[in-house]
Image 1 (spheres, rainbow, N blue to C red):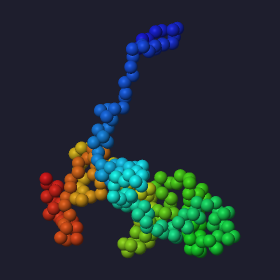
Image 2: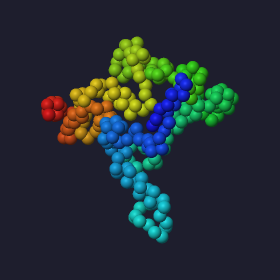
Image 3: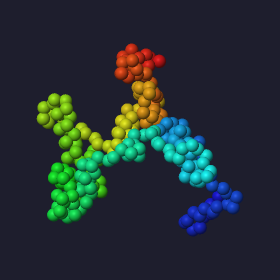
Length: 239
């Protein structure tokens, strides 16, 4: 690469022999991400995907396997293995997603949806500020839902009304996001250890590795209903 001055403008010219180098490689990327293992999407699932492709490509006369379907049980995905969806939540969500004039306010809505589903959808729409389900909400989650979570906690734990604060509630789009948020907050550096049971759901070990922390595994007490054991916790922490 050569530089020349043209008036007040510095012009750079590319030599014909110049070969740009990749800036993102396996060596320059985050090594925590590179070495992280997430068994839920690991080698077993990768091989299952390959076999599934082979099954689709095989003909009736040239079968490589004695089966014709892969059943994935690596994640909690009940609908994929035949569980029927719950009707009432689907009805409520349909009404929330629909514009009011063809949903909760339609004159024939009561013929297609139960009364309690219509009422719940109407309250959710109001809680979303009339913007519908496709708009961004408060970063902690809609206040309506956070207040309902507080009400549930107070009822469950026998707390007086108002004992919990919706401003202390943070909603996430699934457990995985919540786990990731907490571990990112707790793990300051490589000296931070997180105690996790053995066996454990792989997202914990994977996220700890990604955040650069240390996994401190402890065994559950099989003879006592897979409960925790204080002596085992102390042994694991000491080791």
